[in-house]
Length: 108
Image 1 (cartoon, rainbow, N blue to C red):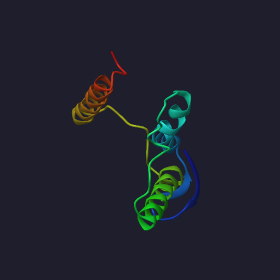
Image 2: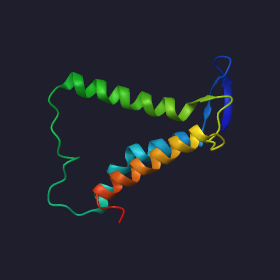
Image 3: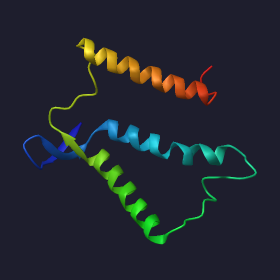
């Protein structure tokens, strides 16, 4: 983590690597779709119903990425599995992700 400017007591303007991971996860469909040759591309051919809704969606999406990338806490760490509660939550998250991937036939 890189901290540049202190904003509040524990909040900093800086960069945290986990923000880059979240950014890649958000953009993953747009990275993969060009590699898959499909007759119809549902992501690129979506029609916008409302210009206002489209603008608000873009503004919120960009601000979400900016917050994930550049606002960090001073005492943050990747994650720890030191307590039973953290182990349980981590296990549930991994089980949910593997279930979703299995339903999508990505994980066998």
